[in-house]
Length: 341
Image (cartoon, rainbow, N blue to C red; front, side, top):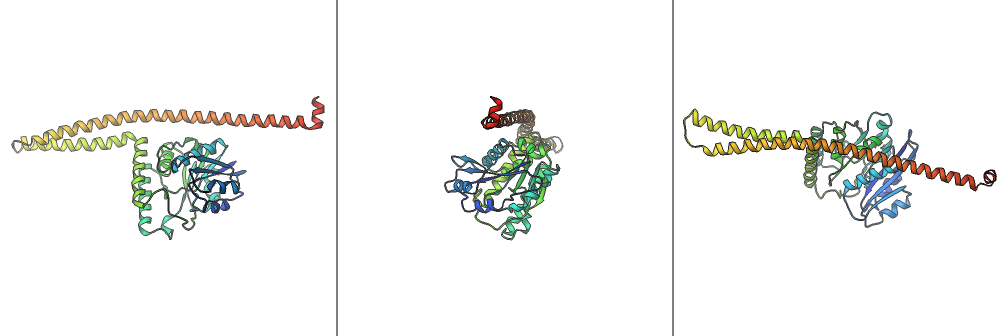
């Protein structure tokens, strides 16, 4: 059982050592623990620090691409390196790495494919009341749209089984947190949550400038991802509301014309006709979007098979290289060389 802990980094030379030092060296049920750094265009000594502390793998971006891209590239690299379980943690030392065994336990027991660390934000002292309230509201919104029961939807302290990682295809630019939850439920992956501890703040978040920007970006991401995976529901709701509005205006025109025998109100009739036509068009757009969604699902299935074939090929190549190296070692051994000759 191989565990790879991936850490997306952007100018983290001060806090990265704190994270690397606190990562457990041994975990029951895990044979190999390795670390992976995704350097997202850092201009400081992040890479030098990672090398100094013996990080096993380093993925480097020539420029800053954002957290979502760093996360997905880290997942892909961890899979290529043969990870059975992948833990994602932040480089700002927000999370207690000592809780990694607790985080991966549901995966080891076969109870979940994806586990999210619950920070219990209501108990974090350095969070303001406003931030705590917005965190609760945001997580509740994600639970509503995704159909999950995750209490801390934006927590970046997560564990993924190999199966879950193979199914993750992050397409948003802002953050992977919300999208991966929606994907997990849509793809029927086992989703769990465990309580984790947090450390004191080391710096301000670089993901967003202020809380209102975070709300705006998170809301946009959630709506886009939900529409991507449930397009017919979204267009059905919008189209139905528009059609009903037009129907009500049409009924109003008929009431004034044939019950009250009042003339005029032609504007209501025109607007009613326009709204009903638009509502019907939105419904038809939903059907087309649903068909596109089916095509996307097939594309993701093909992509997963391609990933599997590539990873199997890489594994076979590594085994071949090890076999060749083993044979060369035997041939270079004097006693064996004599027998071969």
